[in-house]
Amino acid sequence: MYKIVIVEDEHLIRKGLKFGIDYSSLDCVVIGEAEDGKQAIEVLNELNPDIVIIDINLPIKTGLQVLGETSHLHYSAIILSGYSEFEYAQKAIKLDVVEYLTKPLQPQKLIEAINKAKNKHDSVKLLDRIGEQTNAIKQPNLMTSVRQTTDVLVKEMIEYIKENYHEKFTMNDVVKHFGYSETHLSNKFKKHTELTFNDYLNRYRITIAIELMKQGLVDFNVLSDRCGFSNTQYFDKVFTKYVTISLKEYLSLLQ
Image (cartoon, rainbow, N blue to C red; front, side):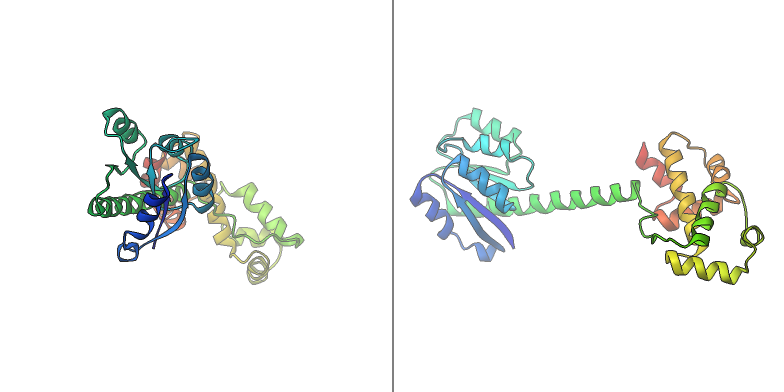
């Protein structure tokens, strides 16, 4: 349900707003109320509502001041006022208010305004979600799932990756370097990091590639070679697997 806070200094009007509308039929619930601007700011910060129905003419701080000082919260605002002057409506528009309703209030107008506020709230949440997903893609934490280890051999294998990621080496090269069987090295690495050796290597290479792209290196052939991939097509395939979008799509996000 959508959470609503009502801010109105006149007691009877405030109670009329609270009990005069069937909020449940609108998939809404009134979670709080305030009778002056100072109290309103405290209530909004505490309850973080989805919709605020607020009078402009409040004691201590005006409704517009309240909206301005709580603009960091993600709610949709409906303004109520006995004033119909254009100046107030203009300021309300600048504060991105959903609706500006003048008193005496018509219940149907308020219901329509609440439905508009719900739609706006949903749109803002969707955009926030898209923004969060985009940021997560732009800054993927590919190494956060790696378990820390104190095993000496595994730490040496990780150091080997960091020193040689730009080279096109195979597991046979790793076996020759450490002098253990491939099975022993693979099992030990997986046991202590919860990743396969190749998985760790790919994650590290992609992390380096992302840093180089952020620094301005955008030639995929050069990037592929710098990060130890056999060719650009394979590089793009691995990149897409871990970042969920292609190299070209990722580059467009950075620009």
